[in-house]
Image (cartoon, rainbow, N blue to C red; front, side, top):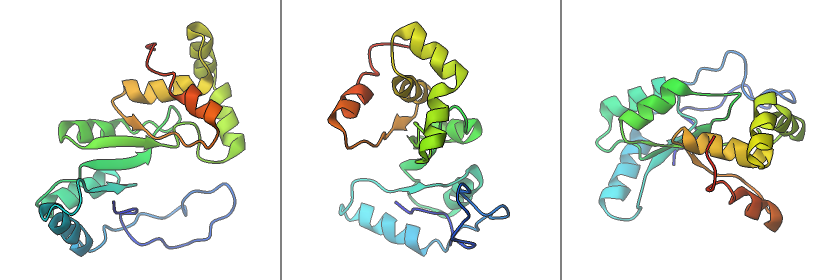
Length: 166
């Protein structure tokens, strides 16, 4: 995958800030994408994709690419619903993979995700944890989720999202 649509500028950032306020990266040279297409055509990779591409970036890339991205990995959760991007990806057969479904890596923010009233209410109604509700929510939107955990008990908990619907 290509990790960012363009070069990062303005880093390092103040704590709690994820992007510089005026950061609107231009799509990088398409040479990287063309090289990835070559690798795919040669059978050296099974899939090619992007991360953190906005709707604008995907549209730009798709104007010049031979092979469309197979996946776009973006932050996606109830506090950052990227509806237009999701619809575009679904329309074009691009998997939207949701990262940070449980929060953006900041423990205080993650805690606020679990205490978000709709999440708490759904967890109580279904006898599930906040994490399970958040993961199930993204899955029901049509996203693939990639929850991170190194704890076996949390991995097991995260797998408990297939026996209920929101």
